[in-house]
Every structure is written in structure tokens, then in C-alpha cells.
Image (tube, rainbow, N blue to C red; front, side):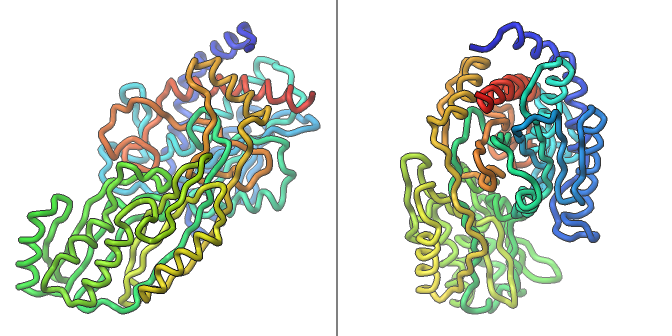
Length: 471
């Protein structure tokens, strides 16, 4: 059972620091930090360098041993025990995308939420766990373990930062990755990224583009077509049947724009893929050349479901559920349509089997398919004592169900030993309309109370994990 006197002291400490916690989070959110490999001669670009400098300075001001490791990642450490508990956060964010009602980098408070890019994924975890460590230090809570907070800057773009960390630093004895939902995420699906290239170039379609990042369902897509009065007339009339399509013309040609609903690639339910909407629309034209229609028809069929059924790779298992498959980006290269695929496959499935199914499907259609990355699943049994301890604490603090789960998202946990996801993205009723407020969506938001509750949960959890590691 939780020591209620200690829990009350922690609760009071967190309440007393609420304004400072919110301001620190807003400070980091004000820095646009989309990871851009090699920009300005820096590992992940100027924005990530700036936010890492600020976060490391913030941690040092709180009394921790804080180090910027050549702008690849940062660490902030408390204590010097014989074992290490790692906490892994990241400061890079996905691009802001479209359709924001609020400013992505000028955070505001509304209805008990903070709104801004990165408030939930994942700058909240960096700030919250600085205050976890500060609470442990200021309240003089004895620990036998060293606590190490990791500050990453390439989680959204390949995780090269954590790969370098693993190569350079000792692995923690147990790690918490606060980049999921509560309670405990004890496994992550495999992640396979690939791109497909059309067999022939377009004839009347000059270019297509859509989406901003591979791990987010595309919320916008556009095709530029050659000027043609009869084609324009047909497309305008056809667009009357498609609420998500707009047709216009300018000096460059005919523009067909599609609007979708963004969502994280691992949770595509309820999303609308703008690339799919664009392809479905254009394949319905009678005046487009058959080569262009064939490409769009193939894309529309391929992306017609989010579970790889059309491709022939659909599968599921008991721990982790269904495979998911989305496209987040499309471009035109040398006149040919190229689109990315982001696939999350179950923890008991082998990546090579998914790759084989993909290649068979695309090669049969004459398309080129290249697998860019295959990150194997991670999995810790749900009856592991550390998993059970985290579940117990979460349930005792919140009174909510603490059943551990497996997810389709990818976090640093898959690169670490003895690691689980544990919070802290917000769940529950949202005051935002569909397509807004969640991670990777416009108006990304995080409950202020959720942040404060998470700090209490993490503080109590570290105390108990420390005891487990030294039994």
C-alpha cells in the first residue's frame, strides 16, 4: 500500500509548484523543434539544438547534473546509486500541420488544458520528470538508485539519438518511457516503413504532394494538372459529389485539393486520409489519361483500409491486436507518384513476413517497393514484478483500471532493455472537436491536472521501483 503521509507531502509539493511547472512547459513549447537532420551543421537542426540547450539549462538550474551530449541528446541525473532508473523523454515534435485554431508555438491555457505543439508529445514528460526529481531531492526522500532523465531530439524522425545513447552510455537497470497512455504499456508493435514508386510517369498530372510526416495520417493532399478547359469543367462538376475536394485553377494549371483528418499512424481509427480522398476523386475522371487513372486507382485500392487487408498483410494477435497500415506522405519524383507506408505489426509477427507480403503485392502490380526500416517489436510480460508495481501504484493513486496493454506506437522503449511505457499522454473526455487536440493533431493539448497527477504517480513509482531493484 502507498504510504499516505508521503503521498500527501508529494501532493502538496506538486500543488505548490503548479505555476512553475506550467511556465517551464510553455517555455519549451515556444521553441519550434521539428527534427531536421544536419540542418545548420547540427545533428538535428537549429530548433532541436535550441530546445535542448534550454532544457539542459532548466535541469541544471534545478540542481541536477545536466549535460548536452554534442546536441545528439541531453541527460539530467540525480544521485549516484549502484543501479539506475532511466526516464526517457523527447523534445522534438512533428511539424505543426494545418487547421490550427490556436497558435502551435504560442501556448495558451483553456478549459484546464495547455494547447501547443509538443505539450502532450512529449515536452510534458521532460518537464514533469524534472519536477519528479526535484521533488525527490527537495523532500529528501532517500533512494539507493541513480535517476537519469534523458532528453531526446530525434524520436519523431528515426530515433538516431537513442541509438547513439545506447552506443555511448550504460543501459539503465529499468526504464520508464512517459510517451504513451497510462497505465503501463508493456509492449510495442513492430514498425515497418516503406515507400512505393509508380511504374510509369504521369501524363496530364504534373505533380502530387500530400502529408507532412510519415507517422501521421495525411490531412491534406494536392494534385496539379495541366490546363485543360474540358477537364476543368468535368472536375468541377465531379467535385460537387465530394465534400473533401476543392478544384481551382491558376497560372500553373488545375489544382485539386483534398482535406482529411489527421491521426497518429498507430491509431488511425476515425482519421480520413487526404491521399486516399485525392486518389478516389481523380480515378473517377473520364478525361484523365488511362495511365494517370490507373495510378490513382491503385493508390485508392491500396489505401482503402487501415489494416492491410487489400495488400494481403492483415494479421493480429492476442497481446497487441491488428496490424495497421497508413500512408502519411506522397510526392512526385521524376514524374512518378511515390507514397510512404507506415505499418505497425503485432508483437508475435516477424517483420520479414510482412515485408514479403508487401513486395509480392506491389511487384505483381508493377510498382517498386522499398523497405526503408523495420524496427522489431518490444515486449515485457505483464506479470513482471515491475510492471505489476507500476500498475498497482497507478490504480491506488487514481482509482482507475490498471490493466497493462500493448500498443502500435513506437517509443524509445524498443531500443532499451527492461523498459515500459508509462503515461503521460492525456486520455478521457476532450473539449476539442474531432481531429483536434490529440497528439500529432492541430491544437495538440494536455490536461493541466493530468500533468500534476502524473508527477505524483511517477514520484511514488520511482520510490517503489528503487526498492524492487534492491531486494
